[in-house]
Length: 130
Image (tube, rainbow, N blue to C red):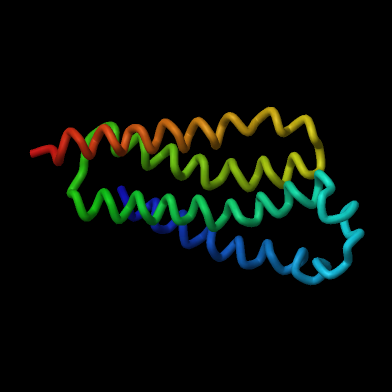
């Protein structure tokens, strides 16, 4: 199960590297995409960093599950939710940079992360299933 999260994390890290290429070519231009503080540019930066930030959440999850030998439905649910967040957060960030109304979808990755982290904590306190 944690292998899926490790794969998702490394794919996101690789995509994050590629996603930084275009902004990296134009970051020196203060007016690119409407300027540094413009909505599109801020959301593009957030999308770019979310590839890495949530990848580290997925890696931390996989390490925790493996190290503590956690299993069960809560762990499976957390695994899926962290992968959903890994896909949804950068997708919604980039989408909202182009179409502001898509910002209303941020509840999807945010709730996925909150519920996933809560499930992991509960699983940790319950201990490994035998």
